[in-house]
Length: 301
Image (cartoon, rainbow, N blue to C red; front, side):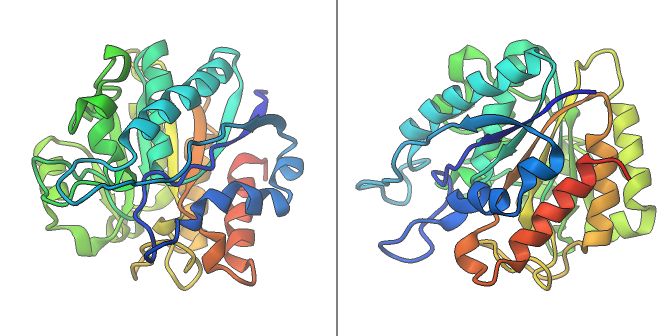
């Protein structure tokens, strides 16, 4: 039985300000889930906090590339150090974000160790890069592109290890059906990256799809895989506290078997949780639900 290690990565460096003069509130995610006793309920060990640099876009303007890039690069390496340590020790790191750019820390850490896959459970592909968009800037919507070697090299080729992920080692789950014709998805399909939309998942069954992915990730070419969970994969009727609460998302009884099947695999080496914003959840119900879902996935029935 592996030790679950709860590690806070409260970075909001990859998101745009929700309003002028403000900062994204997703850096409070870890604190909110801890208030819901996630560590005690999982019997997890304490992994501490990887403190991020200050959120400051300075004089950044559209067209300048990824904002907070230098801070993101520093933070990615520091977070990767911590994740690498726990994976090498045989622990199961549970990384509490933060925005989606924290996934770069996991990808870099695992690239240092070997070759790993990624199962991304997310409402959007986060595959925006200069080759398919004029709106590059927020790494929280670009981390998959950066991890597969696209975009500016000060983020996509840290330590000369880029790409951190190979396209054939990536699986996407829970993408909104409304994004089917988005340029990011068109490109991903051309690259033959398996993309499971909400309607696909409902048609084929979440547990069965996850089990097929675990089998695919069982190839000797891979050393294991990581799971990235973005809270916005859930429908806003149950998870309104995200920066992009798009309609027609997954419901809890659909997400639970998908996530449980993935993270309980012996090949799964860790999980990160991102994007939930306590500032948008005044009564705390969405945070309590997210905590319940993660606990249910990681504990025995």
